[in-house]
Image 1 (spheres, rainbow, N blue to C red):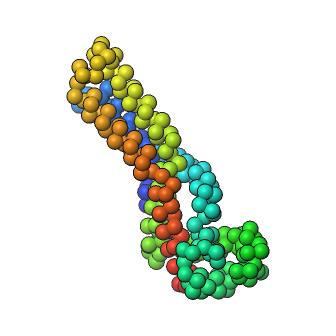
Image 2 (image 1 turned 180 degrees about the vertical axis):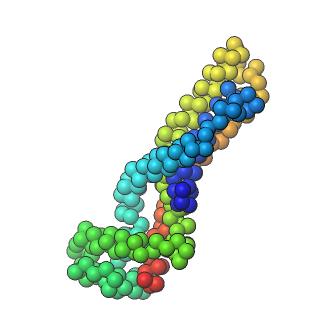
Image 3 (image 1 turned 90 degrees about the horizontal axis):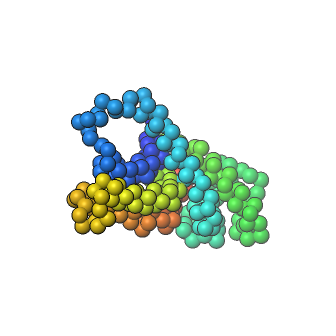
Length: 236
């Protein structure tokens, strides 16, 4: 499995399923007793591959929504004359270079963009695809690759967020229910110490998903990735 799939797709799913480890610890898991039921190496590979696609699908479904909230894909925004992320001198150089590298039949100056914003964005999307297609060498464009992995990781976590929150809340309740069932009492004060450790662990993870995994958190890496792509235009 390549580094991108591992970082951007598998790791988010590991974080997603991490709370389930709590249920294993506090309910049925006994390593000495169950180690010989371990998952075969081949099956681990299959599960990792499946997990990578689940993580990617969740993120890609969310991507269109967050781009719409931001006013378009970050790479498209950085090409727009009306956008202020890049200075005008850099933007002018990038436009001139892209008109040479990927001509579209239109000279997308400020007036054209103002009168035909949708057509201008169509050109910018074509330019973006060209730049991405010509910066796939992860050794030559290592910084682009790292930023892309970071963006994919955060985007996919955001896509998984509602499911993760629902899972963790369910596990918090299930853990309580398990100890009620096994101890025969409803008062948490009479539960063993492992109950409190498990619940605190789940609550901390829940807070992470609610507070940290946000559109703004994803936006930071999305624009960092877009900026690295635009910086590479002069090297093409």
